[in-house]
Structures are given as structure tokens and as C-alpha cells.
Image 1: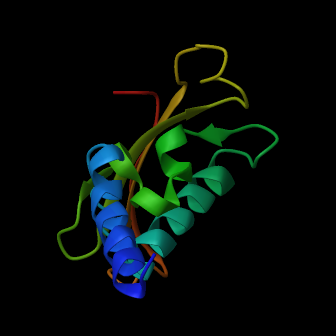
Image 2: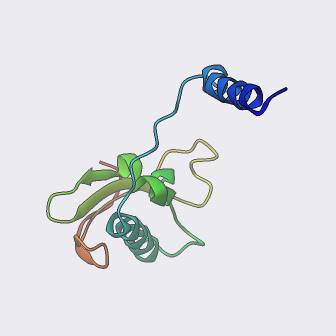
Image 3: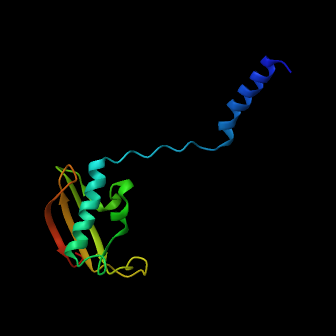
Length: 123
């Protein structure tokens, strides 16, 4: 087998490989460092004002730093506003209803809480 035949064979094999792999998945958009920080700052503030981790857990969306808080992020106007439920440790896993709703506004750099908008019974 000549060099040209082998090279052509490899090119043809290589060209056909992507066809068998199925649809190409799009890469997820990158979440900014500030938004990731903001999720953590908001979750930690909620933990602090609701009695600490031994008494309180925020909703799952507040643990999704790679998606920037997901559904818990309700606004990005002049900072980050998060609204999320919480309850006793294990409340979501047990299928229990939330006992607390928290809404916090975090600075645009994600480093500090600018306002505790609401923290109380679910509205």
C-alpha cells in the first residue's frame, strides 16, 4: 500500500467519523465570575440569616454556580437579584414544601449584599 493510499484512507475515515457521532452539542454559555460569586454570596447570606447550615438549606438552584443560579436569578439590572425558597436540611429531597422565601440583591461585582429585599414565609 502506497503512502498516498494510506493517507487518502485515513482522510476518508476521519471525514466519516463525525457522521456517526450524532448531533453536535452546543457549548454552554460561560457564566461570569461575578455572577458565580453573586450566587455564593446570596446563598451564604440566606444561610446566615436563617440559622446556619444545621437549620437551613437553600433551594437547589442556589447551588448551581456553573449556571449562575439558574431559575433563582430573577434580575440582572444593576447587580444580581435572587429569589429562592429554603427550609430545613433535606426539605427538597423529602418533597416537603419550603418554609422560607428569600430575595436578595447582590452587587454587580458579586462581592456584597446590597439589599435584603425579603426573608420570610413563602409568598
